Image (cartoon, rainbow, N blue to C red; front, side):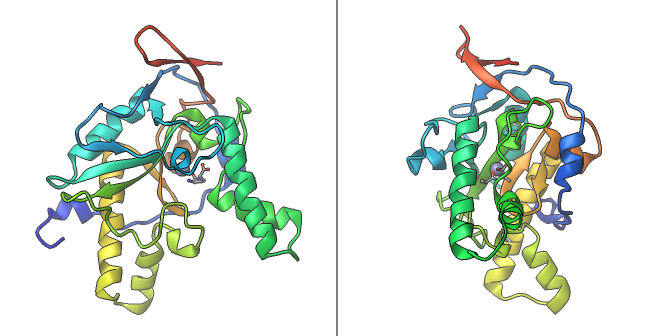
Amino acid sequence: MKNLNKSHYKLKIDLEKPDWKKVKEIKIIDNKEMLFSISDKSNRIIVKPQYFRQGLEYSLPECYCRGGVLLRLKKAADLLPAGYKLVIFDAWRPTEVQLTLFDRYKEKLLRKHPDKSEKAINKLTEQFVAIPSDNAKHPSPHITGGAVDLTIANAQGIFLDMGTEFDENTKKSVTNFLEKRLAKKGKLSPKEEDILYNRRLLYNIMKAAGFSNYYYEWWHYDYGNQLWAFYNKTQAFYGKCVFKLNSHFAFDVMD
Ligand SMILES: C[C@@H](N)C(=O)N[C@H](C)C(=O)O
Ligand SMILES: [Zn+2]
């Protein structure tokens, strides 16, 4: 890390928890950009669809995102140190996949906390999986084609240590977990320091390309949807989208 450019670590990770009530109230004027497949668009982006690999029902063998997201992913990838690549785990999601993810995690929490109320369990679930919604006024982030889950691989193809697995549902996944520990204790172990800088690298290139990060997950970034608009204090331009294949093998956004 010491031989890498300082600009990769310029910004410390400073984030707030989203207020989902406010997020859902943000106005969306969809710009109708199409969904594109992400594979083969840049030699610095690898696609590894995690939910398909896990055999999740309705998951897809390819990742798709809006045109503006694809452009910005390429920009972020080009900002990486030489040889490093972005690894995409998931992007646009069918509502059915969002539902399965939500139910799967909720069941896990119910088993762990049989004494908690349904309301409390839903609130906990919502931290790691957005409430499944294809309501045009407040669609779940991944249903818009504006959200992407990703990490970084180094020049040897090894995933950088981000401190947790993808989708690990613990407080260690909170993006600035180690920033807070550093501020409190004044120092980190060498391994923790590596993780802190790896997260900062992802955060810095994605911020520079125009994305926002989701407080609870180091791997989840947004552009153009309501969650992004919340963090950027603006309106959203990506709403709910379903797709149909057109003659250019891209996907038209449908209402
Ligand atoms: C499930 C996880 N990978 C994820 O994407 N979580 C966010 C909150 C979401 O479901 O939008
Ligand atoms: Zn995500």
